[in-house]
Image (tube, rainbow, N blue to C red; front, side, top):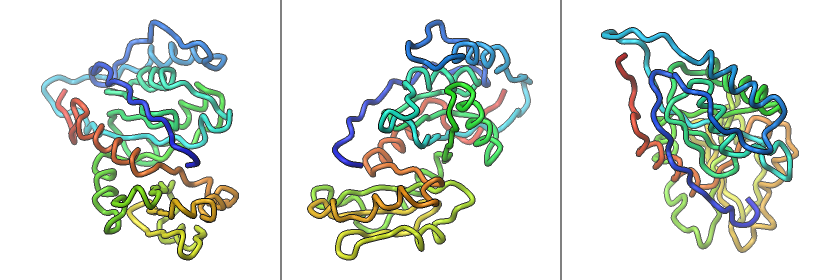
Length: 247
């Protein structure tokens, strides 16, 4: 949020078969204690049954938006270790994008059960209380296409952020709680998000920073508009994307 965030795009890895992922050969230095054992255990149990010649299950492209990692020295997680963790769990087509914690992957399943599975996986692997907001490819496209008119159109004048909301918090409820400063901030409700813009020339007067101290912040994670558009482009270009596959 403060300052320009350096963005680094990691290459897509190979595609695994129906959730089967081998254990990584190398483990990153600085990974938390027990990480290697966790990944090896996950790798050995990540295989899913395959039934040839019949429809098995829908596989959807998702992005997991992690909150509260690599911020001010708290909850440091290196992106190669994060990618390896998802692959060891059996997720396909895993790719990470910048240090704020954005993971693209394909998986069967949906909803709160998948969120809980990922949060439990991350909490065990990296020894912190994980919180994740999950969005499908279709949902991400709807968020970009549903942005208010001219949102993102004047990057030299405004900073644009998308505030993702974790269920069961709704955009309507969050809109009533997020503070704004007149003539500096504007906020609009979307599908599971708030669109927040603020004048760059008066950014220090913006009230967006106040939300960090509010209880509702625990159900939010924020991404800037450039990151949002890049994630959607990555999902558009991801190999094997689609609503489902045949085994």
